[in-house]
Image 1 (cartoon, one colour):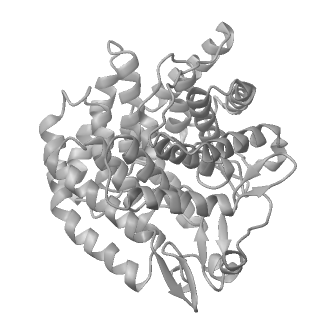
Image 2: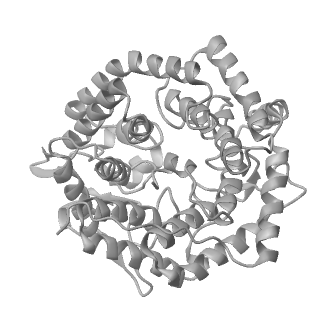
Length: 454
């Protein structure tokens, strides 16, 4: 068995001149609507105030966020600039960089995370830097700031391994899986490489088993007192093991696998990859359409060694496709054909499963059609599974059909039947535009590294 068996990816773009032109026109119109940061902030604050008046839940606007703020929009304009270097997209992106610089000077930043902290800020600016040839001093300064803050952060998360792990310690959104992906981009910088090594060593430690209630369980067990939401506390009174890419153990699996594939290894790293992958394989569920994974494994299911339940959703954040993608990466890293085959079978199962069972309700990335589309496109490229092309094309059509020219940014997020309008990457128009843009190019993108897809 070749420990690093890899496949030569072949990016297969969408076909059909009329369809491509329709997709391109939507991307360009969406990008045009996202050019003015002042309008975006004003609209976001107005929507926030409206929800406050209505007594509804809201996420406070922060322009530095990768999820909904300026950093994510830098990814869009950076990708457009990469593809059309004479299109003035760098000028549009520069407006956001200036505002981010001002925000950092005026309000500072508390988090180091990828999706709402310094790692995301750097990632956004890096996307506009034309391979580091621009904003070099700014990037160096921000990375230095990160490195100064990092030891204290690591002290806290390492302490939590003994006192009780939080999902936000290790996950993609707030924790070390996302931070590690940012560091992996800068792996040739000696101090960043050291920090990355510490992250990977933490992941190895996280994968160690520990005794709870007289049983040996994986270290990523979340005890009931560490569950954040009251609904989770009610549903899982004995705690759980999170299986979502966004907040669960597939995030560390993706990071460990990507690092291994890029030649960054630590002692115990391969064993950690194997431990997570085999655990996920143990909790695979099969229905009449194919393989999938639960959103969570309960204490009782862990004890029984098997999970049950219908698919949570066919999304990046939770559900079969996201987990399957991480298993594919693990299979590439360690040369395990069974993991790769399970990943392919899961995507084929999604293609066969009726759309009414997908539990997708909007075009956006995190838990919508765009995320499933980008993962499907990646799997087509990496595996050569052309049977997935009809699924990809169907997803493109669903997204195009959902475009609403009367909406502020063309695409809306649907939450509990209510349309919400976000500009950003995670659950907004920029993420949809990036995904549509990717399928009409003949070269693979860079931006989806923030979702740990590559």
